[in-house]
Image 1 (cartoon, rainbow over the protein chains, first blue to last red):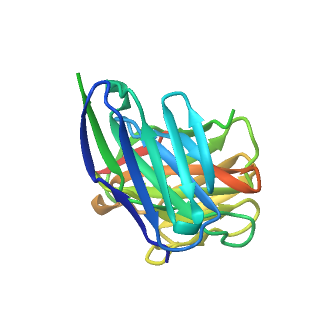
Image 2: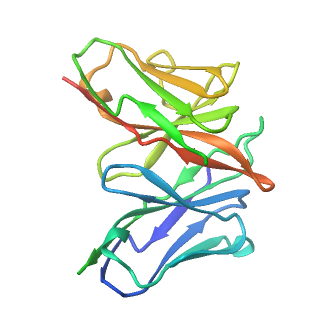
Length: 112
Length: 117
């Protein structure tokens, strides 16, 4: 199956700093999503971005599908940004559904 | 939009009992829903794909007789853990799929923490 690697596994930032999280994947994908898992376990959708660039406030993401990677940028980090960031990818799996394979995540800690 | 709920949020049960978890898409219809399992400090592992009106598709290594999935309507899928044992204790998360552009996007429920004593 498809392999998903996220880096770095852990990241500690001072509040206000910027960061880049990376997601590499081993095969062509038709689906790529970034999530933030909060301390209570809820997965928050950040971006649906199988290709191209998107921005939402202090967050932006870029996926270069031909080179099989995606980047998540966090600017002016806040303590509420702390948590685990997951990249999940999927090929078209038939029957109209898109199964996702998750990376192991990047654990972000933002300190005041 | 795109809200998915799960019930219960947490459950504690005795070994040998069965537990049912509900997953609902509140503001959209979902032909396909997914069930995941997450162990502490680990990533999400797909257990099964649930399609409305048909049998679920289970991932390799997932016992279909232990984890019964029913997707009886376009807004509800249920996961029943039968004859639960302590090793079934985990965080179970569902998602519902919705068309987005030329593809599909998954939206996740808040999860259910199962503890089997």
